[in-house]
Amino acid sequence: MRFFSALRNRLCWLPLVLWLPFTSTHAANDAPALPALGTDSAQNTVSGLSSGAFMATQFSVAYSASVAGAGIVAGGPYYCAGLGSYNGANRFLMTAMTQCMTPLGPAPSGNQAFRQAQQFANTQEIDETSNIARQRVYIFTGAADSIVKPKVVAQTRAFYVAAGVPAQQLKYVDNINAGHALITDNGTDLSCAANKAPNLNDCNFFQSRDILRHLYGDLQPPVTQLGGELVDFDQSEFTESNGSGLAPVGHAYIPAACRQESCRVHVVFHGCTQEDARIGDRFYRTTGYNELADSNRIVVLYPQIRTNPVRNPKGCWDFWGYSSQDPVHPDFYMKKAPQMAAIWAMLQRLSTPHP
Image 1 (cartoon, helix red, strand yellow):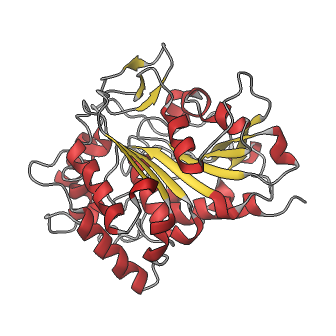
Image 2 (cartoon, rainbow, N blue to C red):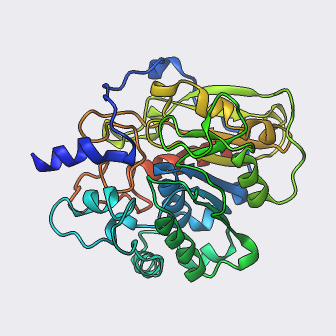
């Protein structure tokens, strides 16, 4: 019983709200298939907030041969949940909910995380870690973040330094008095220093655009009016079972040019309590990614997690093992993990040549 109590009270580091069973506004068979667009697989990048930041890190590390960069907002180092001091069957969960968020002592070590990654690469559970050094990486921690403490995010930087990412490729921002949120320039979002759902805070700039500019270099200015399509797609074809934790439907922004020309892909992982079943289209429509993507031939993929009242009541990405068949020996950090493999399959679909 203590396990379920911990899960309900601590899961996904946001103030406790009443959870509801997952309901979707779409049936899976109502959504079309993700299209084949012939995207450039050498220019895949990812970003995410909170649990989505942990996911962005672990995906870009596990598939480092195929990911050119990562934007990490309020997330800890790779394999963080496996680096704690807890023992027993629930050690990954307990580490994720405590030492990877608000540790009383030192945060899990980024240097140790890199050594673990090297071991996983040696057993071919992830790509060679030498690939990480060529990536461009953006890391952000808000000075007012009380949910994932800055000292945790500092160890994410330590991980990438240990991996050999050059200073000019690694942007680390820790001097903005922001709370636990993806930062926007929307006056209707929360105040900059807020630490509460929906974790979209107005700090007078679009963080999404800083991320894309760092990952891709010089970009054209964002459009003022979108010319592409925001589409739903069926996620169920990319999962082998309902245990993956993915929702039936995901979303993607496809610039008009990408229907005819080769484009890049940026995957955005939402944070806990930010899935569409809870906040509608706010995350994938109002966070500023689409306007910059439209003018720079970038397809933006917004995969969605579904809420599970026992295993994942706040709709978080898996960085401790809830989607693993054996949570005592989880595989969330490996290429074969259900969510990781599903995202990779989506990228493969997008890179398939136009029919």
